[in-house]
Amino acid sequence: MYRAAARSIYHSLGKVRWAASRLRRKLLEYRLQSRGVQKVNLCCGPKPVPGYFGIDFTAGCDLRLDLSLCDLPFADDTLEAVVCMSAINYFTRRRAEELVLETFRVLRPGGVCRMGVQDMRALAERYLRNDTEFFFQKLPDGRDRFGGATIGDKFAAWFYGFEIKGMPCKYFYDYDSLAYLFKTAGFSIIDKKQFRESRLEDIELIDNRPDQMFFLEAVK
Figure (cartoon, rainbow, N blue to C red):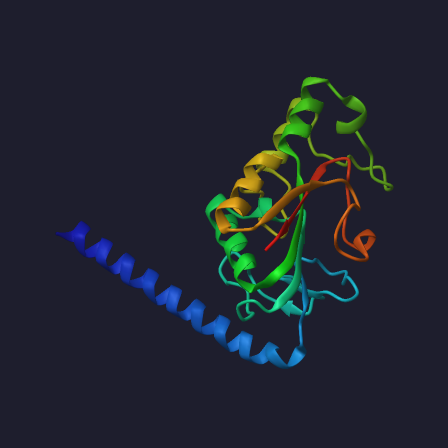
């Protein structure tokens, strides 16, 4: 009886949280209508990309929003482009799937989404090659670029480390596993692109870290 009551309370709280999140999205959507947003940079960090409306949970962006809890605050079929660099791996796979669906919802027909993602396949290949040059890189201040004492430690850090303000990585992808999320969301074209090869203008301001990432571009 107590377990049934607990489950009922848990599901009721879930519905309340969902309703509150939906209400917040609608309020933000109403506020942003007058901004004329056309291009969005998800998980943008503190450095803005000209022409893109930046969303992140840290200071310095256009809108502070925790995308692990909140959906995209834009109406259906309204955006030209959505980009997301080196960030989808900080969400669970289920939440990533939801965010890809949200991206499909807010893009207009012909709109483009581009994601740059740490490449699980390429990292595994570097590990198997014992690529010390890659794994033991140094930052300009002399610190190790990747934490850990051995190549095994540094490789494991990709999956268990790299915290941003207390948020560790939650999932990793190769191209096929991420493309699957876009395919099931309904995107009509899904391509693997080279570094700074894109349908988007000013891609040189968006892409980064080609030594670690693959780039997926999808068209609604």
